[in-house]
Image 1 (cartoon, rainbow, N blue to C red):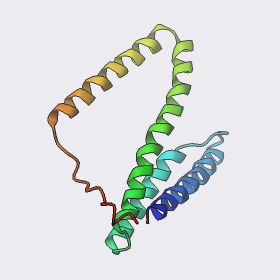
Image 2: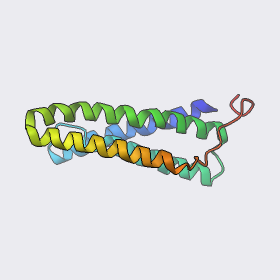
Image 3: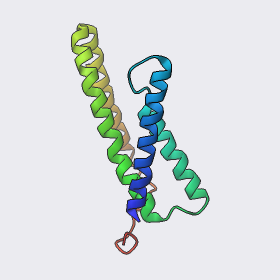
Image 4: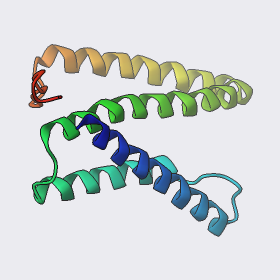
Length: 130
C-alpha cells in the first residue's frame, strides 16, 4: 500500500531529526546538524534493504517516491529562505553568488530536459494502487 511508503518516510524523518539534534548537542551547537541528510540516507538504506528482501511491493515504492519527491524540495526551500536572509545581509558578494547559482540551476535544468531521457520508473496502474 502507498501508506506504508509514507510511514517509512515518516519514520526516517523522525530518526533523522533525532540524530541531527543529538549530533548538534554533541558538537555544542543548538541546532539540528544534518538531520535531513541523515533522514534521506536512512530512507535510501531502508528502501534498498526492503527491496532486496522482496518486501517492497510496487505501491509502497510509489508512496516513497511520491512523498520523497515532495519532501526534498520543501526542505530545500525552507533552507533557501534562511540563506536568502544571510545573503542579503552579507552584501554584494552574497547577492552575486545567489544570482549566479540561480542562473546555473536554470541552465542545468534546460540541458537535462533537452537530453530527453525518461525515468525508468513505471507508475503503478489503478489496480496496483488499491
